Every structure is written in structure tokens, then in C-alpha cells.
Image (tube, rainbow, N blue to C red):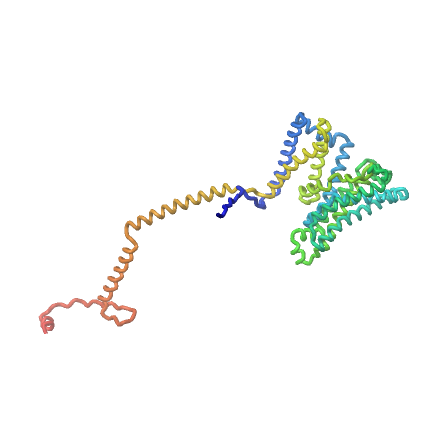
Length: 445
């Protein structure tokens, strides 16, 4: 006996939204941010047994409470933004570069290699420039390797770049074991290579340089020929080939740029810190968080200023709340708060781009239409019944045939000059003749 399968159908379907205007979309995003802040405050109040006012107060104290905290917050902001910017060219090209963590770590490793090898013999200015060059080269190479495999053999760039992260981590651990043979696993604070106080205040140089990079990348993506080619390849590889764009060249060139920007971020992490050093957790997951920043910023460097700000604000503020209320690991609490915040924001972004249509409305409309058709059918059936009561179809045909026969016979009778053709000429009636004696004799004869 054949088994019957029950087909499960969701009561809704999702369609791409194309009719929402820009101001409405940003209104939805703004409302989602406000709701997310309120909900995270409620969760924090439950976990800390405090109040919502205290939550918001500690959030701002943790980020902007003092000048030093404000500078650290701004540095964390621009560092996350810098790695997010590095992902923009690749993501625009639909090359899913998940290797920003490893590429940034390789850039940091390059700076430490330069410090270890030439820190004692080179002037500080030359050393910093050499660190910059090596960091960009190391990061570019780490982006070039998966690009070549993608362009030539069409490998999966997501898995390839993800695996490259683990290779970078092991290389850093290997280098640290060479530099710290005592088995401590750390190299301590380096004496050379720091440029964080270039303008007399820590982190200012990082903030200034990343702001400049943001403006340059925005112009490059939006107005340059290379930016146009990146967008075309991202939209359709076949279209790019049709109009003469060398797709392989664009893939390699763009990933070299992406890796180089990550290497630049590694240079900032080492040289832009007042305590330059390196370890396997130096990037601290920014390479993955930057994916969220780039996506929420719609791959627009200007909008990403705001998305990176929100992420770092939530992370720093949540850590301050956890420290003030003594609720255990500040990083764990920060992950809870940040996760809840961005689940709400991402949900709002989903509603901006997609429309959820519930099928129950469609079913009601179909049922209403079916009822109308059934009512109309009953009405038609009644009318046909009435017609059948008056005369049947056979009676109607017999009556029609009888009428035609009578008409034909009447026509023949009246015609006196039928000649076998398809036309009949009816005979004109003669005027009546007066009866006289002479006429009567003629009729008798």
C-alpha cells in the first residue's frame, strides 16, 4: 500500500521589497536601534538587579567618562572600522573574504618582525616606515593566495580564507616560540616601533589616518574605474566578460587591496599602540565582527562609520556595566548585550529589505471568490431551469423547422416564375377585372 505524504506548507512567504523609500528605511533602522537599547537595558536590569537609568549611565561612563577612556573608545572604533573597510572591496565583488582576522594578524606579525630585526639599528622614523611597508606586503600576500586559487581554479573563497586564519595564528605562535624560548608564550612590550603619541596624545594618529583611508576608499569605490569594475563583477561575471573586463585580474587586484588594508590595520595595532606587542589574540575577533559592521553599513564606508561606532559603543559600555555591578566576566556580559542588540537591528534590516506575506489573506480572498462564483453558478442554474420549464431543446428545434418549412412553401406558392436558380421573383398581383357581359361570354367559351 502506498504511503501517503503530508505536504507541510508555511502560512507565509518572503518576497524582495523594492518599493520602500530611503527615509522610511532609515526610520525603521532608527526605531530598531532605540528598541534595541531599551531591551538591552531591561535585560541588564534583570541580570544586575539595578535600574535602567544606571545601565545607560554606565554605558556612557565606560566610553566617554574620561579623556583617556574616550581616546581608547575612539581607537577601538577606528580599528574595527579599518578592518571593516578592508572587507568592502572584496564584498562588493561578491568575494566573501572571511580571512580578515588572519590578514590583519599577518600585518601585525610583519611589524614585529621588522622591530625584532632592525629595531636597535634603524632610526625610529625609518623603522616605522619599514614596518608600514612590510605590514602592507604581508597582508597583501595573505589576500593574494586565495584570490589566485579563486581566479584560476574557482575554489570556495569562504572556506579558503577561513582556513588561512588558522594558518596565520599558528605562524604567530611559531614566531613567538622562537622569540621567547623560555616557553612563556609572550614576548612582552617592545621597546621600539611605537608611534601612538605622534601628536602628543595617544591614538590620535590612528584616528586621523583611518579617517583619511575612509574618505579615499569611498572615492575609490564610487568614482574610480577600478571601483566600477568591482561593482560590475559583483553584479554579473558574464556581463563583465561581455563588456571586456578581465575578471581574473579584477579578483586578484581587489583581494590584494583587501589584504593590504588588513595589513595596514595590523600596523596600527602594533605601532599605533603605546605598548606594542603581539600574540595570537591581538586582533581579538575584530576580523569577524567587521563582517557585521560592513554588512550593516551596506558596504558604504561613510555609513560604516555609524555601524562601527554602535558595535564598539555596545562592547565598551557593556564591559563597564559588568565591572560596576560585579556580574562576572565583562566579556561574557558584553557578548550577551551586543548579541541581543544586533539581533534586533538585523531583524529590522531584514524587514527593510524583504516583505513577509501571510498566505491566510490569500486564502480568504480565494474563499470569497469561490463563494461568489458558487452564488453566480446557482443563479445561472435557476435561470436555465426556468427556460427548460418553458420549452425543451427538442421542441425548440421542431418549432424552428416547422416555421422554416411554412415560410418556404408560402414563398413557392406566391412565385410564378421560378426558373431553377437561387432567386425567386414574386409575381405581381394584377388589378381586378370588372365583370361585363362580354367578359362572361369569353369565360363561358
